[in-house]
Length: 228
Ligand code: ADP
Ligand code: ADP
Image 1 (spheres, helix red, strand yellow):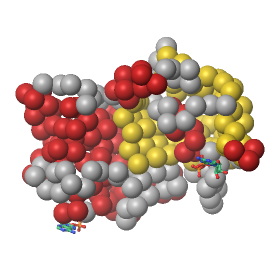
Image 2 (image 1 turned 120 degrees about the horizontal axis):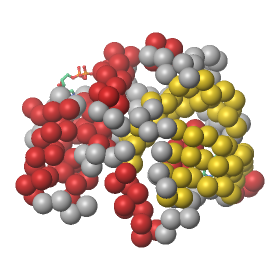
Image 3 (image 1 turned 90 degrees about the horizontal axis):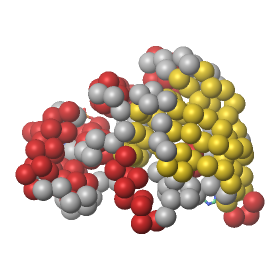
């Protein structure tokens, strides 16, 4: 599903964010990416949805090497990959419904299909009753659930989450994990960068630990292990 082959990312001033990373994620996996601040986790994630290009190496999503993908094909890639951020990134002037619908409008769905799918995904994150609310009228946990609904509206094969619980209190963080688990159980491959030690150690899954731009550990049912 996802394969990085000897991936290097060097930012200006010779900052090596990733140094020769090779890793594979199989369809249907749920993977945590852990590591200290500055380890390269966000860079790893940004390479997958082509927010960045590697300095060297290949990044395959399915059969496509996204590192050489022409810009005009990026929208097609983004239909295969949903992304969720720590700070939600909702459009503040649009309602919950409109935020989710927007993701579908840009890929030219019919109004009928949009209405149907938005209702469906708002149901999935249990926010049908807040469809007409603005983001500012929601709690942090609810805003993140809207962001997740938006990210999966296109039924992407992969959901990438960069610190999705980073701005949330512990109880709310668990409700977000429940939503991500549901999406995973529907068959979506999930990749989640996190500092949430409790979640990683409680809901055991594959853990890829990155430090200083390299993969330090890759364990099937790993631990958070270190104090980052
Ligand atoms: P993490 O997500 O694990 O905190 P990042 O991937 O954000 O790590 O950062 C890895 C390294 O790359 C850090 O040294 C960071 O300062 C640097 N870096 C990240 N993004 C950029 C950028 N856009 N330009 C320059 N340096 C960057
Ligand atoms: P959570 O348990 O998800 O953290 P909160 O206790 O923060 O939720 O919020 C409880 C309810 O109050 C939510 O349903 C939310 O819609 C509403 N709410 C939270 N913040 C605001 C706000 N700034 N304006 C209007 N309603 C709000």
